[in-house]
Amino acid sequence: MREFLGRLGRRVAVVNLDPANEALPCPCALDIGELVTLEDVMASLGLGPNGGLLYCMDYLAANADWLRQRLQGLRGHYVLFDCPGQVELYTHHQALKDVLAQLAKWNFRLAAVHLVDSHYCTDPGKFISVLCTSLSTMLHVELPHVNVLSKMDLIEQYGKLGEGSRSLRGEKEPSASSPLPPCHGQGHPAPPGGLRAPF
Ligand SMILES: Nc1nc2c(ncn2[C@@H]2O[C@H](COP(=O)(O)OP(=O)(O)OP(=O)(O)O)[C@@H](O)[C@H]2O)c(=O)[nH]1
Ligand SMILES: [Mg+2]
Image 1 (cartoon, rainbow, N blue to C red):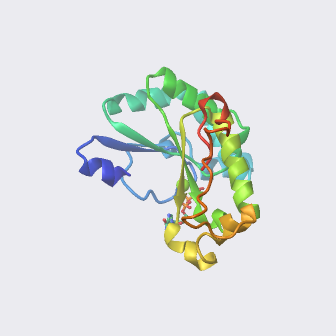
Image 2 (cartoon, rainbow, N blue to C red):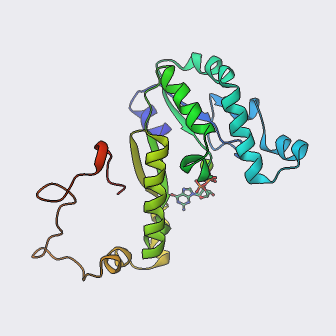
Image 3 (cartoon, protein in one colour):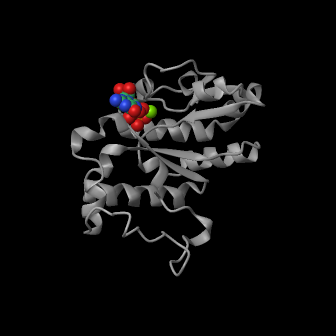
């Protein structure tokens, strides 16, 4: 995404908000590791990786001024915030939600991009589970939300593409003579509150 925006001539900056990121995959304009590191938290408070990460996010929320100050140099940029993968941060924990609310107050116009491992779409149970997680995230985070399937290059390892979604509906493969009905409109209710359907 960073490369894509750069090639379009946009000014882009990556901000690492994941204290568990050990080796940053690209240059970051700002790194939460300058404020707090997971390693230090785990060592000094005797916490495990998950509890340590939640503590780091609470610490970030409590030090929002640090973030504000560091972001000031990024005005006029498209800012890509890399957030931790722990699901509870997006379903019921408050800290990241508070940080996002602060960013909105500082006039950042935010959208959430939820990277969904495409492996979850290869089995009906996993698919339902990831849809519920996604919906829960949309309700908790309250941002415009886009789900993106990641690791599509690996999906064929788990079975033929499409089998999971067809068996989920108990249907045979759709053909041109039996098109799938629209998700909403024409008698099908639209998702409430202007929310997008998860997929
Ligand atoms: N083959 C393949 N590997 C990928 C892709 N995206 C990420 N990976 C690799 O998958 C591993 C895990 O990366 P992610 O799933 O992004 O997760 P993470 O950022 O390490 O962890 P969290 O932030 O905690 O979710 C890394 O080794 C990545 O290089 C992809 O599209 N294809
Ligand atoms: Mg990550």
